Length: 155
Image 1 (cartoon, rainbow, N blue to C red):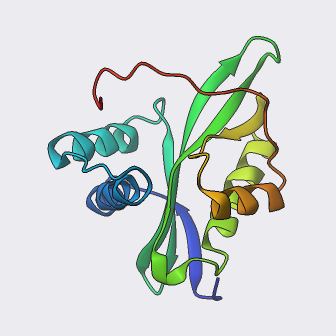
Image 2 (cartoon, rainbow, N blue to C red; image 1 turned 30 degrees about the vertical axis):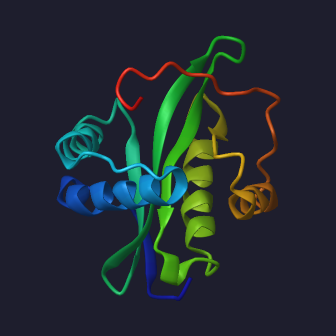
C-alpha cells in the first residue's frame, strides 16, 4: 500500500460503502445479489453495536479501498475468544498491492494485544485459490474443520 494508505476502525458514516462492498463481494464470489434492504441495516447493526463485531477499512487518499469485519466466538477449550475475519473485500483495481495484508496485520496486532483473544479464524470459498495463497503467506493454516450451515435467509 502507498504511504498515504490508512487502516482504521469503521464508523457508522461508512455504512453505505461497506454495504456496497459486501454486495460486490457476494456478486463476485457467489453470484448472489444481496438485498440492500437487508444488508444496509445488517452493516449498521455491527457499526452501532460492538458486541456484534467490528469493521476495519483501508483508505487511500481519503477513499475506502478495502474492508474486513471481525466477529467473535468463545472457545471453552481455550478459555478465550477467536476473532473471525469475514466480509473481506478489496477493490479490484488495488488488489495485489498489500491492502488486505495491511488490514490483516492491523487486526492481528489488535488481537495479539487483546486480553483473552486466543486466535484468528476465517473461512473462504474453497475455489478461491488466490485468496488461499494470500492467507497461507500471512501465516493462517487450515484448521481441519469444515463449515456446515443451514441458512434461513439466503437459501
